[in-house]
Image (cartoon, rainbow, N blue to C red; front, side, top):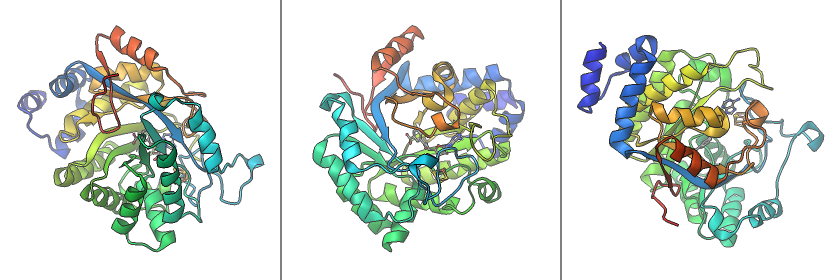
Length: 359
Ligand code: V47
Ligand code: SF4
């Protein structure tokens, strides 16, 4: 089997779902590393991408209560309970810390607030563009978009068009979790099902909004569910070509309703990256989100098919620190450049759509 697959990979032939499951179950890690590396090299040479970004999480009040989530609070929770609701003024204060050139992207996602519809999002996006006209706004998961359209009673494409007009540049990959309905129901019951997640991204791609895709793994899913998830992404990408990056997210187990489950180990992260690189032959970039993986693991994953490390982040997200990851996630671009260089790779600052930036 390994020889057959090696030939397929060398001739850029697509592997099947059955073959991907076989790889999860049987392939030696060293073999996966070599194959994923060869694909990454063909696509990107020695380049390792990063960007300069911050996150903005407007609220952690959420109508859902996903079992893996350490971040959300009930909609009626107060500050004492750990809930927050930031205003535009809070956002302005945050942005004012950065000179115009220091940031190219703001990534916005948060809890699904019961009362917030498209109008609320339009106001937020327009405000950001009025104070930072050139910043790329990557905002709102497909789950958030779905809820906003429902609150505002607008049809999906109409809602997306309104967001785009107000300044939305791309969609982040969150909310995908795992597409299998049974597993999704158990860990994220109630929120937009897989079909809807894919429909939102497809509709966004159709009107020129590019996006990313994530996969939450290492909880109660099996290898077959991971492969099914990636297959559905690969199928949509064949139709739209709108996904820029795939971002596997390892389940982190602190402070949530599944805390009794162990996290998978580092080798499993590496194997998962490598198989994603082999299987997803039509999504160009594979991102290791260092905030979730830890800095050392993220750099090490560059040897398993990864070409992108996300961005500087600057202590602006709580989703992972609340789930047991780095407490104050921030990296300087100098650190990223130095570490990538030490690994013999070429650091490349990119914009949010993977255009290379020359400063
Ligand atoms: O959808 C929440 C995940 C996602 C936990 O598009 C958890 O560039 C692990 O999607 N353990 C939100 N994962 C973050 C996200 C993202 C991050 C970075 C870059 C991009 C991009 C997207 O975080 C959620 C969920 O899958 N998540 N809690 C947890 N305990
Ligand atoms: Fe809400 Fe998102 Fe957390 Fe689920 S993962 S509870 S939708 S904030």
